[in-house]
Image (cartoon, rainbow, N blue to C red; front, side, top):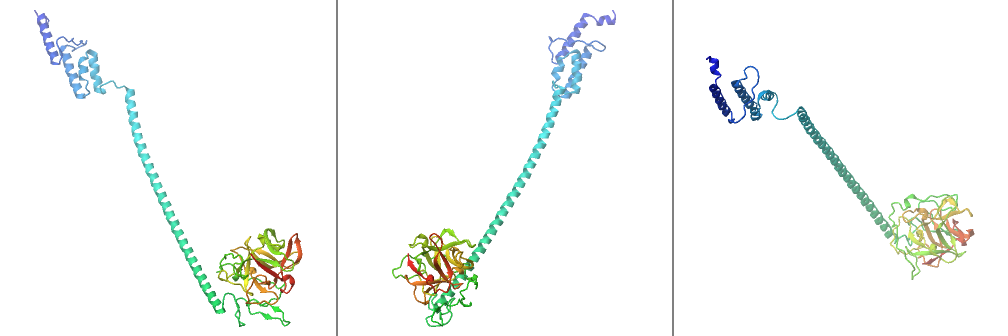
Length: 429
């Protein structure tokens, strides 16, 4: 028997099978496990298979993908294929689409991170800009408050200065009045100047001559002798109070500062009247003053007030020769006259109601005189016949039987004060 025939004997095959089972147990396979499928081709014997199995085991351990057990149970071409794939890509069922998806997700994550950083930066810039805006607003408010405080301080300083000047002027006038023997009263036995007047002089024929205004030429009583009011004797910066208490009635019949009176024209019996429904037609467009009916109504009452810049005590007795203002109780305007406008029917200087409690000038000043004699220094009482002389022009309050319309009798400023039409009587409210 040849060596080759002995090698193929049944006994030898049994030994080979036993040896093969031993190798299987070495790899963790039991005796009943099926044998791996033999591959055709050279060197595909049992030892070649065993050698390949070792290679597969070693390769699986080197890659570390956890696929060792799977490759051990695959046989034949599957085992070889599994070994080749294990060297090129990780184990598991990952497709090319899933890998691309993972890559896109990684890129999106990176973009999201960058976008978040950019958003945080923009928010920080916005917060910084808002903080700068708030700071500037607060700074502007503080500066405006500081300016307001400075303005208030300056205004308060001006008010204090004006009040100081007013007190000084009042003290000066009180001192002058004290030296002259009382408020706006002429000296009893002297020819020196008093207030804005000198002592009355007598005409050569024995008639009364009104005094000339202090520091001004004597009156001419002519309409073409235009005289202007002194701007320093207006209500501007005047210490004279704007309002005085209204005094109604008097048991002693004496006219005082604050008395409410009506003026009745002696010749026609009509009362001196004004209202808001009548205005002049001469161009001055001021409130018209006229004679109206024979019984006083609410528009016929006037309050006696001091001249601008005079500061008598309320209730002071008014004597003849005193400069006064008459304020209409209902409308608050002052009895007024001027040179520039003439009454349309007579051509004489017109008389109007002008101004208010805060606005008055020297054309509102009138001198109260006793008709025919002046009687400067004597007390003015109810019922006496008087003349009201316009201080600037020297002419007197005048009316006549000349009607502008029904129940509207012309009142003007005219003449020396010697006519019957210049006479007026006072009634107390």
